[in-house]
Length: 91
Image (tube, rainbow, N blue to C red; front, side, top):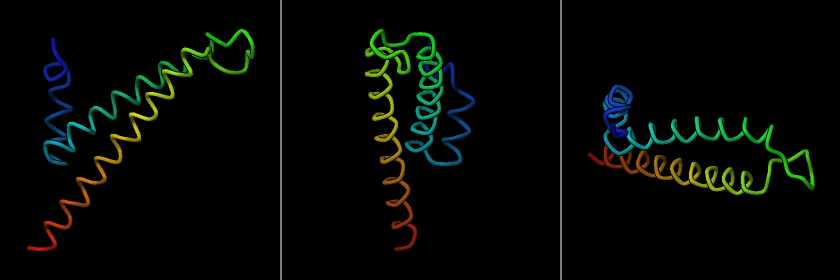
């Protein structure tokens, strides 16, 4: 089963509300946020041997990459929203 089948209802809802591109990005952002939560919870139990107050180095790298990806997705969604608003106001 692929992601389009698995998340069909969420995709349809968000695509209807936000348009195809922004809707799909919104679902991707939700999936990424859920993954960040799970990795963060895992980081509580998988700590660095040098500093037990922080997650292990591999988890820190994963979390950093996921947070960066989330920021990129958010910036694309904002750019699409701005472009759409400009198109609508110029009509």
